[in-house]
Image: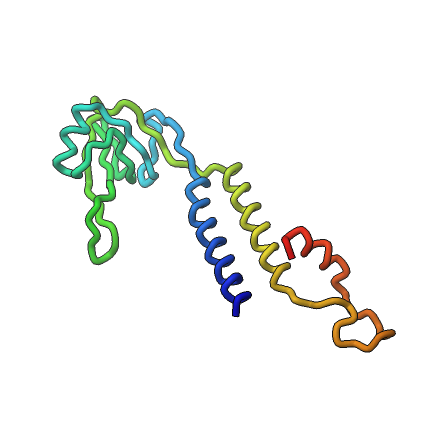
Length: 166
């Protein structure tokens, strides 16, 4: 019974680590507004006046605006920004037109291959540790009379388990 709780607890911890590590796979890079791609996730840094103007629409005074780029024109950027309201299909989005004169900088979200590689390696190591610790093969002579044949084909099991605290 006690071991079952420990196993479930280790799975929960591994799941939480995975969820916590996923944002590390992305980073933001400054991109000239002419090179922005419609449909991409962007972060716009706004002037103080624009942040104040949007406070009435969004209910917050952040000087950064995270969302999806819907359109780009000479006059400004049209962005779909998540709101704090939840509708029948999940989080609702508000379309916001940000004038170019109010943009201090625009960043595009991109996959960071190095960080993603580290996350994948960590998840693989945790999964391998869980698999190794879940195998309970026993010692070569468990249940056999003395002088029996050694049928343990996992000769490296004991040193590996010693590394993982078993």
